[in-house]
Image (tube, rainbow, N blue to C red; front, side, top):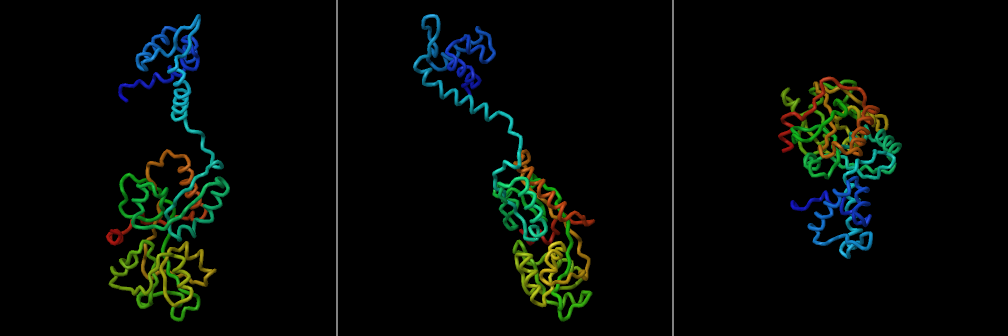
Length: 319
């Protein structure tokens, strides 16, 4: 391939299409002598005269006739490949996107995102998959377009953008037999707990904070989904510690009460994460902005001092 001068292809195409040196010269903007010189190079390269005299004009050789359509197609395809991309039009988008996110994110942002996508790109498809410890690998491998979550140390090439913040609250059912308007630390520790573990790992931030206070809690049930935990909490005497946004979204429907935790739990931020291979992809840019707009509509208020990374103990559990 190094010995092939591909810049000769447009010249060869012009000669084959026009069937004359002067016509080919006009077609590509060269002088007639320059085109004659190019024809000589092509004859040497192809091993064929390409054009031969016939009376006062020139005719194509059989080899030239065989090459005519093939070379023309190659030149057209090369021109299309190197042409600037068409302007992005969301309404014309027909593409499926894979989004890694928890049911917490879907509950908070799902409706707003659905309305944005439905209005702007009705033929686009969104496929949501749960978070796992392999989220960074899935992004690297191109198995997912974006991920939403709170992470530890991500691979350095991955891009991140803060999407929304949230804080943790405690939840019990209306009419809970022992929990009143306030929840003390001793009572909190004595209750049976529900825990949401989206990545299927035991322990977590709440346990670390309690342990620092010399307190242990008993996790009676651990489930992977926030909505499952909220439904179970509504029909039992468990206490559940979950993000406030998803708790408030479901409280009235399920008959739940929100309470302040008995210890300070730092707010946290959920980040939008993607691989830089999509930085210049206009459709992917639109998807990311759609997620940001959905967050601004559904979770606009920002919690100060929100942590953006998992605590060290959380990261150890994920390894």
